[in-house]
Length: 100
Length: 134
Image (tube, each protein chain N blue to C red):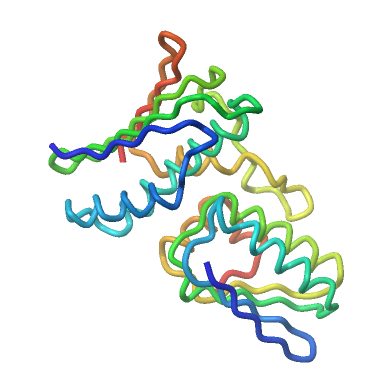
């Protein structure tokens, strides 16, 4: 998986490409630790190039959403393909996150 | 009927290699992308559960994968000699909970049950045997 980061004044956008699974989810967790240490309140995940997600990836998103909420910011997930979006929906994550 | 097989210890299980081989197998057998997604997801969740929760500290248990395609039926069989565990009996997470209430765990086996057409389990001769029809 590749992670591309784009930072504006208040928002960090992470573009993920490839697979977010048990092997690669640690990479995203580590990147998010850096993002949260940077202090930007808002977080956008661009998943247009993400082919696959498993529960390991969902856990990282859940933790990220909790951290963003705790610091008073907003988190958004955009561009997910139908297979990835279905995973968010069937687990109820679409009800607790902003999935576009 | 065509099939793919893989056998390795829990500690040596190579998800990246298996995923590439399954992608090749699916391409050769003209399996659609959404089915490939389901196969890889079910395999990852079940095997991760074996490695993380059923295996000893040395990760020496054996995990065997068998993926077969016959007509429109895809069957994934996973056999292991880790701790006895029936994935059908795992508690389901409450997907209606609020963000604050949601727990990090419990999602993997839930996703398996959502993505299979059927799931069966048998413990025999010291081995867990799970068969998923996709």
